[in-house]
Length: 405
Ligand SMILES: *Cc1c(COP(=O)(O)O)cnc(C)c1O
Image 1: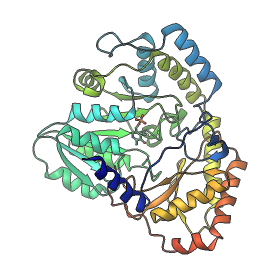
Image 2: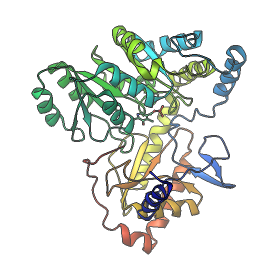
Image 3: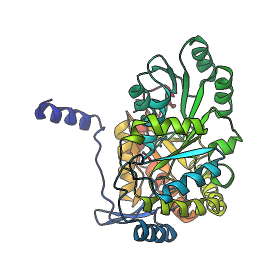
């Protein structure tokens, strides 16, 4: 594409209120950030337990670098697999109650690796329509046949699974939907996978560390265990560091080591990160007070926002999207909050379905009740401003039908 054409495409995006731009943080990731020299109270990170800037993790990373250096220097299968990687994998597997675990550099890469290793030509991948973009990309890369079912629609999935006569079957789903905050019907999904002999890959990016006993995640929340369950958890959200893991039966992990390109053909993440993550595991395990505080903030926010012209979407998790609908109105509302010193990102298509632009409010255990009160008051003040209100009176219900990614 010639550059003039690239520019035209960007201009069109801008005209639709869809241009994306980065903002540079001049402080660490905490609820209090500085951008362009101005302080903001932020409700946009996935640092649900407030660990990203935790002194114990900073100390562990420093000690890890002292002992293991900065870079892994090679892929895991060459000579980039270190003792801290090994220890972390064993600890993660035990924590989530699976026989084995495998570290990946990012959650995006873990999803690509699992789907590509378990499904190929002649196989079928079944995906919730609101899955994360990394799962969508993973199934396209795998070259398997792709079947997408309506958000949480077990009956439709059942019918699709029943039709398939040959090849292996893999169902993939977010556990906590990243832009909606609701939970996948995991008990029903697992029952369907048992009935139709399918694998179930659960992406717990937003549940790991937050939900379930000791923060073991969404599977623990539902009390689910099965050899056909494959769990992917990320380590850059509640765990506060970086990376991801897959936990499953030993034979699945051995297959990933042999076949997952995003594992085989990439440099291992620095072993010092694994040292920091071992410390993070301790904080997660001991984090009941953080999780209880986060739960109180969720209740406070939902109670405080129930009489706004915009609806909070149905969610009990730290992801609390405020549905606005129109792209530009979502940007206007986000800008209005920014003028009041509050940072909440507007999420627009194609990340979410057309007509469902929203403010994705995320809460963290690092927020105080006073922080949440400030957000509640600012949104009420903006709701009183007629020009913002006028264009959002037509706020739609969430479609639950759109494309993502
Ligand atoms: C963030 C996220 C990922 C990607 O994880 P990274 O470690 O950030 O690459 C995958 N799935 C879901 C649902 C996510 O929210």
